[in-house]
Length: 287
Image (cartoon, rainbow, N blue to C red):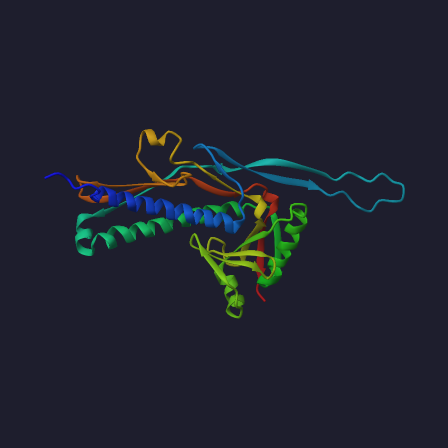
């Protein structure tokens, strides 16, 4: 008997799951870039070096007598290498026994969702690591005072750009403040964000910032670089389902030799600050 037209086959369902995974990830990345105010998303090749600008110098004495030559303050900028953009690879395998015991959706589908969350977490952690290399400093007694100090320094530095500020803060440092405040929150990419927090900017709660420490920078200082997994010659050797931009790729297939259902995921994404002197590493002192 001939196969009926438009019959939905097992391979079609696998393709649907792959598309859903890729589109959900790409959608969450786009939401994150909007939240952070990132206007630049640059495709790069594997191994491209991420560099940031670092400014340093010495301010000359300002006590100059009448008519005397004012001494020059000398400052210079240098390129600091933060690292390379690396194509990361992940794989998970679910046994036939696990599928029989818990059903496909629970054994495979829920595990895929967890994998998606962990991929996002790895990107968040790398982002915080880049910000931790910032050369600016700020401090204050309590959350509000510390953030205000950072806001003032960044506003002076990016005065001409008129940029909005972004703060990465540990949830434990913000818990006491938020307990008595009614502030609408946005949840995306595994992060909770508070827009226009105290009129200072966007506050992002993440455990990637250690308790007692926060990171702050201007939106205009942030850039996202990525390796397009639907390009770079990968398509000639591998079959990945990806979103339109190629932020992430996934391939699902059975392994009959081991009787497992396997998923392979790949992505190369880095969010970094272009100016390290435009990144504040702040300290929150106990009240």
